[in-house]
Image (tube, rainbow, N blue to C red; front, side, top):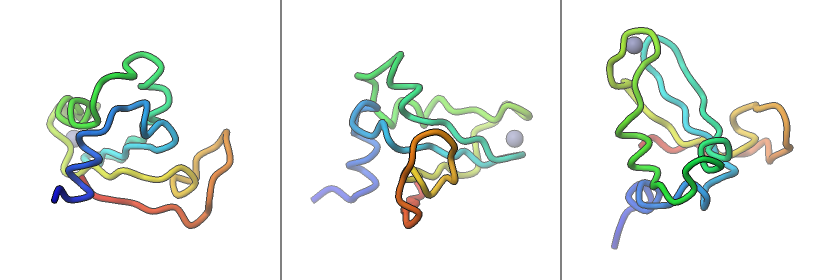
Length: 88
Ligand SMILES: [Zn+2]
């Protein structure tokens, strides 16, 4: 039985298009998956996470979190204020 984390990493960007990735290193960067899915809908979340690099130091982020839309406090489309976060 795969864990939720494994299921998310194996999911296609298009399937999680209403979620965000947050990469933390020198700072926190939030990436809307909807934007990434427009270019690479068939790519898995794992492929994106593996390629994430810090914009400031160029290293791999210390942590990556998947955020349900709304929990990110994101602008634009609405979302539930009770969104969940999951460390990947
Ligand atoms: Zn950094």
